[in-house]
Length: 70
Length: 367
Figure 1 (tube, rainbow over the protein chains, first blue to last red):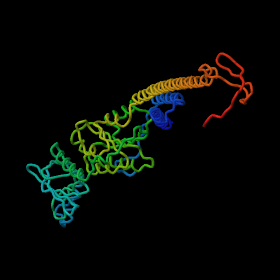
Figure 2 (tube, each protein chain N blue to C red):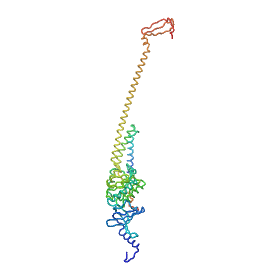
Figure 3 (spheres, each protein chain N blue to C red):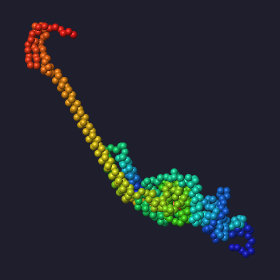
Figure 4 (cartoon, each protein chain N blue to C red):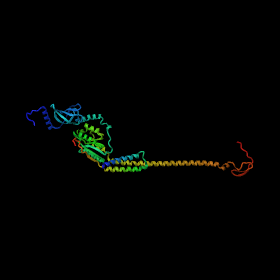
């Protein structure tokens, strides 16, 4: 579950970067800029909510590393 | 049970004495100074271990030599005492490590120079860490304070991360091999972690010498997964630190390096979005200015066109005036109507009068 959400944070962060690059690039078009801006605003809000709600998962490996046969 | 007056063969006595030694001292730890150190056939290591009054013969395979050893170095050995078939007392060394700051430093410097010459510490070998990792492998002792610090700081900074922890000894003779096995374990996983973090809190030079073990350093160098070292304090330097893709000064610093700070990411996202607004406003203003400029240009063009048309009209008006018969008459000319034949009556019009006249003569003008 958290892994899925984590992926979502990564993809949302990348999506936000793409939008920012679009605003700074040659493809910028004022006709659709407002829609793109609203998308960016929504992504930033979602990134904040996701990051504040997620916890890390610590899993101790069962494998012994002392050289004993398992 | 030995019988009084029992007669042994030489070999039997040696065997009995070895049995007794094995029972009484299966393994001993001894500290002493190395002398007459030599390696035979690239496989067998011989040296004497001595102090101010005693000396013991030592033997080991080169495989067990994990750190450079040289004459004059103080070392701690784990050994099995034994009497050889030739009746000589000898220690079969199971492990050896430099002891004391001077010996550790000397061994460290020898191995450092050797590995450096092989290019193991070269900057172009260093790999980048993922900006936003999703899966990490941690190699540490879960009882260590440095491990607890690392987990806590990672938790404060980031969420949604999966950390697989390989619990190993991080000090003592067995520590290097356990860490090597953990590195190999994580490197053999079907789904590789994005980085391996080796964690250990502060300790004495002896404790931290584990992380300058040659085979461990080579295992870190051979790892398919980038390795981050977070070992000891800021001033401590191990060979694992030098060979790692990223060296953190402490376990806490490793946590700061390996994951971004979520509040910083949130703040940056907001800044990025806010920074888009000026671009929109600037573009609207630019387009407005361009439209106004175009309108201004259009008005100027229209005005010039109107002026030109007015000039044309004036010009044609003047031409028309010149062609007006009354203008010609006003200059003294007369207008004649009727047949220009002798005896015919014609009408003559001047600026002021219209009169009738008879044609008396008609002759052609000379050309």
